[in-house]
Length: 558
Image (cartoon, rainbow, N blue to C red; front, side, top):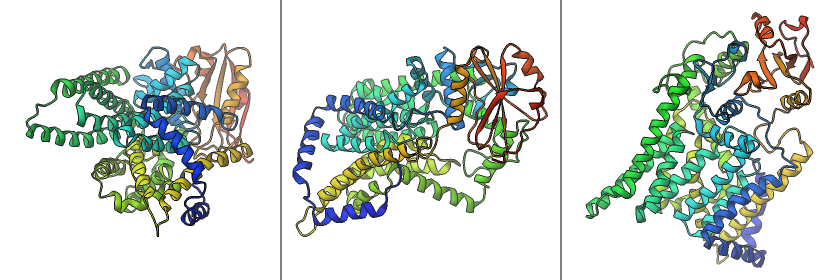
């Protein structure tokens, strides 16, 4: 979603200030419909789940389902294909030196460095027809979980409003639904964890305890660090409630809460140890740690010392890890402060932007609410975890998405009550913000039709060139080996060399041209395949491989 033009927002709020009841009868009728819908809680959950799916499908003519672009997406998709074939990892391929690529471990097994939850969702989508189906379903589940969470914290009509605002902002033009590297899975788990909290305080039911425990398991397998910090914050609050309950003379809810949660955590621990053993060969070594030891010199935490650059046989690894990654953070205090400022900016821009910053003018009044202070505690502790890591993308904060949405809803509730000289300006402002957020959809759609090959309302793009090559080779009879050679103008974030789980059974095998490495063993191994060369730079040029082609990539002067 683009950042809304400030003067449009200012103009709309000015009109609402002087004419707060403009269109009041129309707004009242719409609000009455959603209030009646919100009171039927189960129906509202089904409505939101289906609306999230249908809304994104309705935009397919303007916004194609995603073609993977960045390295993270391909890593998740490879692991999803491994899961879809019934394996946790695959044996190391004898030609792995030519297939080595970003964010995949090739030794001791062929597998992704990332936790398995997102890949599991993509694998489900693949079994249903396409990995993006899994993304679509996970986003729909996220919005339903957010509504269930808000229903536990707010009156039903405010809960529904909060999710509708999130639906408009994130369901069409967000990379969470237009990419494969996640966000929705961890956000769903975080919402379920937060939604179980007020229900547990009232009843300590086994059902809510099971939801709580399963949510923790999903967090551990999607965003382990951020999920752990959020879980610790929630546990602090739960421990205080249990202590207060004990002092009041009530027994600890052992059977209804502690036992179900403990069983869930134990089962997750057993799975994690087994998964790590199958992937890394050591139950106490996670795939992410293994990959960092092999390839990374810049540490995951911002206070850690930067190591000397590593030496790579793969030139693209050198360009990415020894040059680009090390240029992003140099280990100094000054650069650390710059990184933290950029994190805060990107965080606020993604989750709130101009429109949803307006309700937080009511923050001084919000701080008087015990409910808000509790949410701010969760957010503050989680924010410390985000500040501690070297890298940041908005989906890292997915576990606290429910917290952010709850704070936004409470800000809207306070803003709604604002008056000035008897005029209900708060009603006018909240209605204006809802209308403006809805207007973003047609605005983005018009821009998307104008530039269909470049999603201008998104903060990423699709790899159309690689998709075109795949379509061309899929329509060409036989099996293919594609050797990828990068030119001087190649974007290091647009990697091409990713293969399926069962590489030798794939119609298309992608291999990397590495200067100085003899390509003959690879060509002999795939002697029965048609061999192609693609020079990747500003554009991609696919042609049959010639014996004279096995030399360094030409300079791309286009």
